[in-house]
Structures are given as structure tokens and as C-alpha cells.
Image (cartoon, rainbow, N blue to C red; front, side):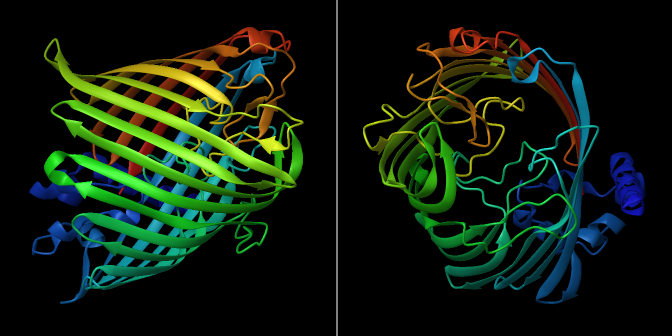
Length: 455
């Protein structure tokens, strides 16, 4: 492991200096790294006969019809909490490391074979959670074959759909989410259509010990997008089904089969962007009938402030909670597999039984971005408790107060090249009446510094 990290450090240093690897190659700015690296486009290197050493690593021509591409990333984080859980405790800090290496084989436009190795570790944390540690694992390994506009995918892949509210790879925490999948796609100019059957991989902390194809949890469905590019308007519509054998709510623990019907409208006009998503859920939790829903609104407007690119954003959500524990109906919304750091990296509250308003302001200068945000949280139902980012019941309903608290955040991001990202984020959460009357009245402070190198 130490040898791999040394090699990674050398590669990152070479990328940073640019001279040993790139020389005067003008294509440096063309490198774009997707959140899911299997979507990286390195086709611009195909016609370059004078590729640098790094260019040859990214596009290794095998014959006229096929090539190999190698890459990866290292992300190091220092995370610090004071009064985590709103109780008086000693300051606690730890170090998170995540290394990912991948190989991508392409044959014509027909076949893709992708493999990704992940190593996620943590130092100095007394009780690591499942999303902190996965020391060595195959995070992605799949075959995708294209026939005209149709594609079929078999294997392991990280999910990432729509606005990442219900099916996401969980980028904020140290360990991403992996699914073992069977997928069928259809892609055209005006519609993308997908059906899938997926088994979430159960994360274990050590090397190659994750549990796959377990029958205690399965998700299936279809996700589709209609595209009207002429009007800058898009419409997602989807159905998601999920079965889990053990689920914990304020109501109790039981098996659950839940169905989600959703639609998302998004687009832009001039400098204005909007994203509206509505989801209704039904099904069974033990002998209880499920009826839950959520609505989410996200808007943004870009402008110049003092000659600098700026943006104001406003987000708000209503996520239903259980209304009555004795009416044989479960009204709490289940966000299934959300992106993890739902309201910043502090991630104290998850998308269940929640109302929030979330204004933000962003400013860009040179390679720096500054973001300021504020979030106010309420319980949607006083009969239900508050759930964490992992949708676990963190704070039971012990009073009739609705207001949970205020969250204030600052993020400073520095990205001097496509290969390097440095970011510092701090959040303060002041408890409201619900937490205070639950004897949780201490202000929470959180800080995280992230350094990520991609190649």
C-alpha cells in the first residue's frame, strides 16, 4: 500500500508541474474528469501522434478499433467535530484516505470493459462507520455492449441518477456506494430509457470482504429522460422499487417493500436554472401501508458582481414524516440511496421527516470559488423523529417542537487544473427548540479539508 501511495504521489507531482509529462502539449485543458470515471472522454487523443507519457497512459492504442485507458484519483481529508450530536464532548478529528485506480477498455463504439479498485481507510477515529472504511475492494467491474441505440450492462457499478436525490454513488463520505447490476439502455436524441435490477453491495471494513448479491436488499426500476434541447427543457420520469428485510423507523423495525414514482423537470433560460422534483411512495412496511411523498425545488441565477462571476441559489424541500403511529399507515419518506452529504459535508440531518429552506451565494475569482450558505430545518411531523444522513433514526420524537436548528456554512475551493482540487469547508449548527427540549443544546462545529488529485 505504501508503494502504491508513493507512485501516486510521483504521478500527482508530475501532473502538477506539467513539464515532465506534458511538455508543451496543448491538450492539457481538454482533460475532463467525470464523477464516474467510466464516462471520461479521451477520444481527443486518438489523432495525436506526439502524445506525452501521460497521454499514452490515457490512450493506449491497441489496434485501429480498440484502446486502453488508465487513471485514478487520491483523496485525502482531515475532518474535525466539536460537540458532535449536540452533546458536550471532546474535540475529535480524524484523517480519511481514498485511493481509486481504474482501467478502461474500448472496442469501436460497441464494447466497454471497465474495472476499478478502491481503497478507503481512516486514522484516529474511535468508532468508524461503514461509510468510513473499505480497505480494499473492487468498486466497479462491468461489461457494457452497444447494439445500435441499445446497450446492455452486466456487473458492478456506482449509481448516479438525475439530481442524485434517490440513487447516488455517495461521493461525500469516504466509501462510495456500489451496486451489482443488470441494465438495459436505449439512447436517442429526444429520449434516454433505462431499466435495471440491482443488488447493493454490503460494505465490510477490510480487504475483499464485501458481501455481494445478498437477498436482504434489492432495488429495481426504470429511469427515463425526455430532452427538448431547442427549449432547454428536460423531463425525467421514473419508477423505483426496493425491498429490505430490516428497516428502522420511529414506528419500529420490520421488512419493507416500497415503490417510488417520480418526475423531475429541469432546464435553463438565459442565466436562470431551475430543477423541480416530485416523488410519491407506496408499499408495505410489515403490516403497515406506506403513503409518503416529497417535493424539492432548486433554482439558481448567474450574474457578475464587481466583475466576478457570481451565483445565487435557493433550495427548499418538503420530505414527509409519519403522522400517526397508530393509524396503520406509514407516511415517512425513504430517500433510498441519496448522495450522502445532503446538506453539506457535516451531514447531521438526512432527507426524512424534514422541511428546509436553503439559500446560497457563490463567487468565483481566478481558480478560487467561495460559497456561503444557510439552512433552516423543521420537522415535517411532530409525531416522527429526525433521521441521519444514512436514514438511521438519530433523534426520537420526545416533544412537540418542530424547529430543529440553523446551519451556517462556508466553502472555499481552489482548482488550479483539472487534476488538482483543494477545498476547505466549515459548518456551524445551532440547536432549535426540538433539540434543546431533548437536552441537546450545544452548538455543533464541523470542519473538513480535502485534497484530491486525479489523473
